[in-house]
Image (tube, rainbow, N blue to C red; front, side):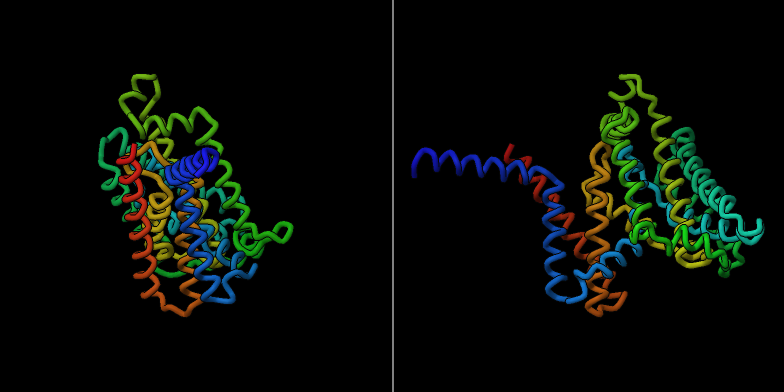
Length: 331
């Protein structure tokens, strides 16, 4: 082996090590493998119609996952998002019936429900010093119960076609509005976390609260902000759910909070706080959504899909854990 060949190989190994240390590289590699597998197994998987369908069907899941990421970055968790979504859906649908199909009032009601529950979560976690798991478990029950109470356990119909267009069926330049909403929320939150002082403070609070406090960061305000934002996004998701269903459904979204948590953690967001990204969460959400879609195309029933999807998520997270241990051992 010549000296130049040796240098080339060493440079190649160095590049590979840098890639392996990059969590997003591992996620993208896993995503590409999954896409390749389903494209071979199903002739319908790579069609434009199917990918648009994935984007539309998982828009609510994507939005909830982004909010969940912000909360987990501050060492918190929000189990209430799916129930808040359902309550926002029911109340926005009822406001359309009560206020002469006013889309503006329905929008305000849906967002306000999410904002108030998010704010309540944040205040209880920060100022009452109650564990986030217990707080959001309690507000989850409150929101779900309120949704069932206001809807009287039934569906609240929506007949406003304009509302359905804006929050479900609409397109702009042949791109579904739901995909555009998801893209805008992703871009805004990614920019907030990576380029703003507020975003840096979110990472600081989650990474080392003591150091953040000593540096003058208002930890309480940042944590309340995280929960409020998560609630606000849950409220917006409720509007989307109302449009997609053409109704407010009090039982809608059960289990979505767990999918949102899975997407964030699979995307590299650490429960220890201070580590993660919106890009990683979106990739994690895509992995979960594509697995579900691909299994559906293969004719796998819903219950089996749950088992397989859960197993793949656990395996992927375990693989990532082994990779982190291996990398730390090689330092």
